[in-house]
Image (cartoon, rainbow, N blue to C red; front, side):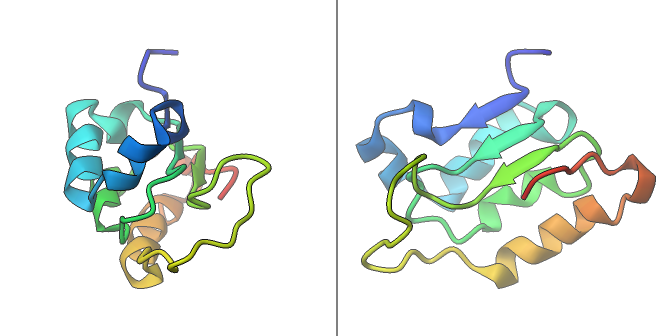
Length: 109
């Protein structure tokens, strides 16, 4: 694969990931041409995003795995305060990927 087929925000410092906004996420996804490159995305520690920044993934045919849990492996899923991630923002983007039918590569959500 290429260097941008996996993007895991758990690979950067937790304090930095926690400061990222939807605009930051959107900027990264656009800069790596995520709709054509990215296969796996993990929003580990991105506790301030609503999901609107995932817009550049709309209609992806290669995305295989999206992890929106915001916590690392083996960490408690309880976040206080509750993060602002929003189904209303994320679901239409996921729908646009799933609706690709046979072209859809999504395996894990």
